[in-house]
Amino acid sequence: MGLQSITTKSQKFYAILLVLTLPPLYYGSYRYRLVHPYGGQTTLQFDRPASTDFVREWLSTRIISPFNPSAIATYCNRTEWHPNLVFNLENANGGIGNVRGNVLDFIFFAIEAGASIILPGRAARSQEDISNVWAARAPFDTFFDEEWFMRTMGQACPEMKIYKPETNQKLADALPGNYLPHSRRIDVDSDATKIAYLEHLDVWLKEKPEYSPDDLTLVNLERTLWDIDTRSLPLGFHRNFGQILRTNPAIARLAAIVAQNFASKYHLLLHPRDAIPKRAYYGAHLRTEADAKNAGWLEEPHSNFSMQTDAYIKQALKHKLKVIYVASGNATDLELFKDKAAAHRPPLNVTSKLDSLPPSEAAAMRDLTWDQQALIDYEVLQRSSVFGGVVKSSFSYNIAMTRNQRIVDSGLVTDPWYVMHQEEGVAFDDGLSRILGRDGWHEMRIPRGMWP
Ligand SMILES: *[C@@H]1O[C@H](CO)[C@@H](O)[C@H](O)[C@H]1NC(C)=O
Ligand SMILES: *[C@@H]1O[C@H](CO)[C@@H](O)[C@H](O)[C@H]1NC(C)=O
Ligand SMILES: *[C@@H]1O[C@H](CO)[C@@H](O)[C@H](O)[C@H]1NC(C)=O
Ligand SMILES: *[C@@H]1O[C@H](CO)[C@@H](O)[C@H](O)[C@H]1NC(C)=O
Image 1 (cartoon, rainbow, N blue to C red):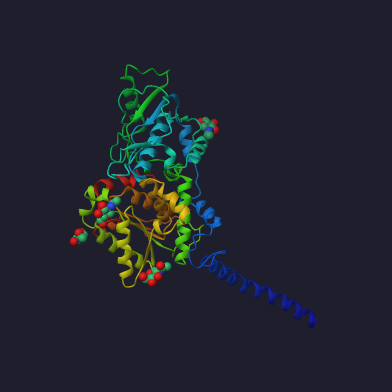
Image 2 (spheres, rainbow, N blue to C red):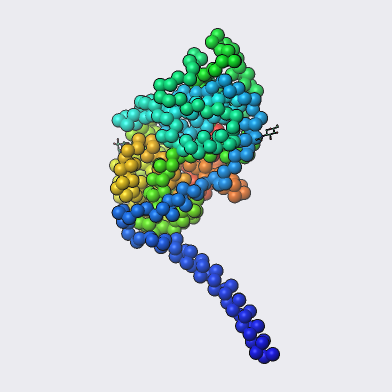
């Protein structure tokens, strides 16, 4: 009896002991592995191959997750389809922020009209003069994941036909002139309904003597930017539609390697499956390049190099982040920021994609155009613990809006625009992202017009 009771007691005792010790042990080793990953090295050694686990896990982790196309499928299913009507996006242009907006607006206008589309390309910037955004043409996959787009649209919107003509292959003669779709910004104009848009398109088509509904009709669409009140659409549509565009996988892979390398160099708590890790790195978009300067942006208040870098350092320290990943298309300004951060008390480490790639990947990056290289930053900044950008930049604002969807998904109610009434020279702050400066046009167009 006595013996039995001791055994029973000791079984219970061991069970409790297990319960008490295992989770802390498990947790402890988990934290340890975050800092010292298997096969990890304490100093950067570029001759070792990138850890494929980190890269794979990073690439399979998304800010807006899970992707759910059902609202898009429902919307497409309600459309009356006219496969003979083919839309072509004539003039998407600029960097990822603008091109993403142009392409998503275009696809939306095609869905509502029930039109087929030509897989949209874009105008490409001159490498010599980055202010000239019209220098050449580039196909869809130079920015985006074509395979994902075709597969997703095939599933969500199977009625939409997507043409991909070979270079110089002509589908048909386009009707003369570009068609500028009737705005769908119902928040600013109560007449901006789907019905009004379809009537407007119908009138435009019927004005053309060449138009015959039974023949293949090619219409060149004039680009629009944030011309749809995205928040007037079903919640699931608003949330998921932007996800049909993903970054070209080869470029996204370079971003993953960049993150892996600086995480290891600075011993960051950066788990690749954590979409927005809490205490890892500050992401800053330093927008001081020649084209921004030529456009006069840097003369605006709160916008020049010293104002931007002061604000980023201050916010990084406020969030106890000692490493700043900086996106900039200007190597000179990157060095200046690095020196400024090192001289700061307390000092901070500034790093960029230029410091974070092994030779073979660095060579692959140099083969990319200026705007494609910016996609590496676009990916890394989206995943930063806290992000800072500038209001004049659609690139910055897109990052903030996508990250904000994560806050919405988590059920938190925040008003990122309230900060405008509280602080001078800040356009957006939701705790995850902060947008510096003020800009009437962007502040009017983006909050309801940009797709997360
Ligand atoms: C489309 O709508 C029809 C009827 O309105 C329905 O029967 C069908 O299941 C729907 N298809 C999809 C993919 O939602
Ligand atoms: C980089 O910034 C410097 C000023 O710091 C400027 O003179 C130069 O034109 C810029 N270059 C590019 C490519 O933006
Ligand atoms: C940057 O802008 C601030 C005001 O916004 C101004 O006080 C400062 O002198 C500017 N710095 C330079 C280097 O132009
Ligand atoms: C980070 O910055 C500090 C201060 O400038 C410097 O001593 C340290 O070497 C930097 N860390 C790395 C990994 O470069």
